[in-house]
Image 1 (cartoon, rainbow, N blue to C red):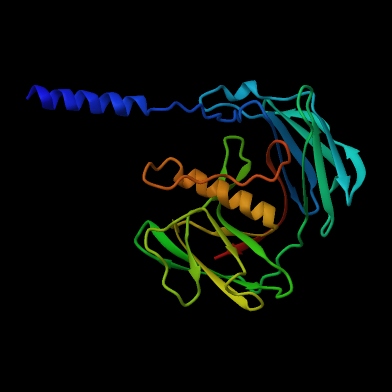
Image 2: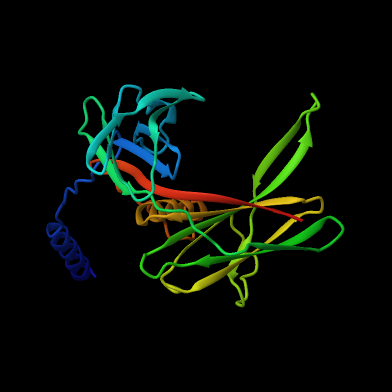
Length: 290
């Protein structure tokens, strides 16, 4: 027995002698400039510049009020964006509007940090075919709205799409004025003629033309709505590669990162020497009435 104990102790000593320590350098991603700007066709450009923070840090400590934000159009300096405060947050706004087919680069110089920048083009709006809505009763309180949207895809261009749905409610305030509310609507989605997944509801639908390049696609949305529904709004957006990957990954992260059983999603970033997004969007709304 003593011999076995001695052999065991000797083995532990040998294994311990083979142990090595490694120092792994983990980069600190906090306190880096963050530049965010989604450029919508025919709209002024509004950017936000902040500092990245660690998880759990106060978000109101990363505001940057002294950044120099410059806008370049097709490589030529266009203007310096002006800061303004809205709801306690600092934004930087352009005087000019975003134009289709133009490449914009936005740079942000923050004292004490390297200049960050990002660039993208502004796409043209989607020109869908007729959008049709039918409403049928489910029970005495709810109706089912079915909306068919036809996308005409350009075969010569890689296209990216986002579709969102809203209910429009009108109510009369205490002063007698009518208030119009535009509320995000959860829905099921799928290609016309194919079965939809049960209980797979979401407020946004993203797709590329990878599977239907050059042909028309009819997207079907199904939503349970209130009995007094009169109006809905379908928002169809054309996106670029950068804006599609950012918006889709940010949406997926919001949906999945709080679920401990889901694979974590990394939000897309196209900012040089920093974090965030500069992306182009062309958004159009279509109002549907019963």
